[in-house]
Length: 71
Image (cartoon, rainbow, N blue to C red; front, side, top):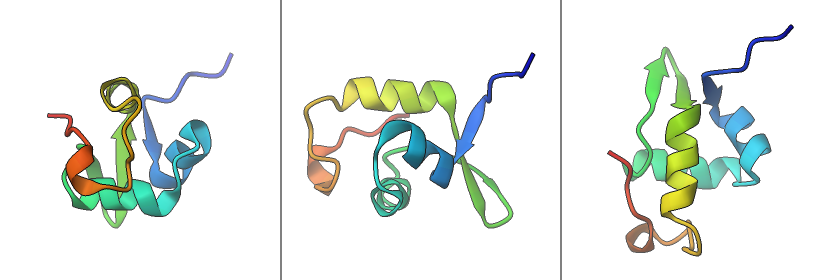
């Protein structure tokens, strides 16, 4: 039995959500999604990602001021 992941890299989060990698990187840079930094890699916790998607349903994630940040 395979254990479920607790956190995703930007690439994995992009594949699982359909949000582009560049958009995810922008959201991280804009401090809209909290991350764990491991070296040069960013990890996004699964529950944070789910919360972010619920909170920003119907918003344009490419527009900085339209996105609600997760604390």
